[in-house]
Length: 375
Image (tube, rainbow, N blue to C red; front, top):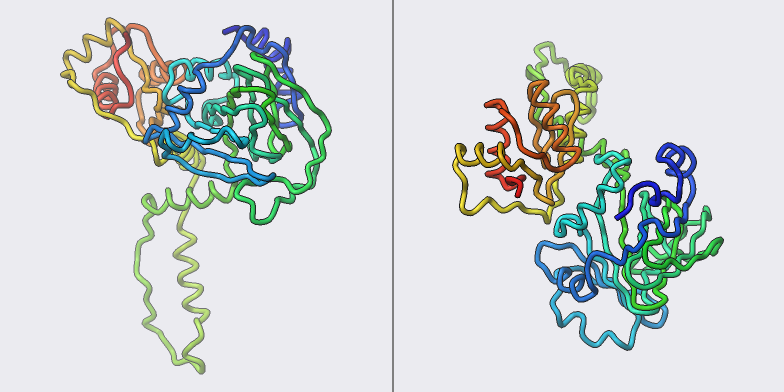
């Protein structure tokens, strides 16, 4: 795989972020020269039948789209030759080292924004219909060719009763056919429609854009285990009311004063974001190592051969605090530098004389299945 010299069509990262990111589409011919994909159609279908993989099968009949969710079996892909269809497999970076390596090319976008790498496979004519996404996405063409139609239209009315979020009135503004190695960047809300020209596979590098409502709700959930409002409601001077069904101003004021004791600061928000954005999706599970190395053997091994993250792990950091798969750990300044390097690169070469605290933390993550010794 080539580097940023071709990935962004000759643009520097700063130029791309300034002129295109979350602003307008960008078509790059030969973004990754000689790229033809990471797996075959048969491998993609087999992966979609794996229990811990999220996948969708979309069938098109008489202009209507039908959506089916994983888990699938091989039988689900029989008898599809007479219709147009597409299979979408999420989280490819969790299952293929090559997928994780591909994502590293996009490290100019913070890890906290990354969602996952998805692959879509379709025979000629397959697609999911015109739609828009609320997030940024790079559409990298693997094998075959896909026609992309895009529109910056403001009308986002959806077809009623459709199983997919299909646009009711899609007005094509631009259209291209992408060949292997070509890439199209689309900002949020940019309407698009991809149609397979022949048997083809497209790799989608998606970046999450959580809604403020979602963040606010989850922050309140985060706070409920971290707040302490002391005291009990009391009314020793209670007086009779003309209407006993009414909530009194005295009760309202007393409870309001108690609730106003709840406080949070930027550190609370940072800790919430680190935990929330690194939290694995519900279908993701980690296997404990078998056989299990002792702490002494683990320590000796990683000092010689280094360490690497499990493909499913998400690791973020800020202000001497490390967030690993939804867990928060405060570490020393020296250990923070080491762990931040691990979070940046997802692997470290030989570790020279790590502190006892760092070794114990790494060993616990090893036991949890979050990381493993390097090869």
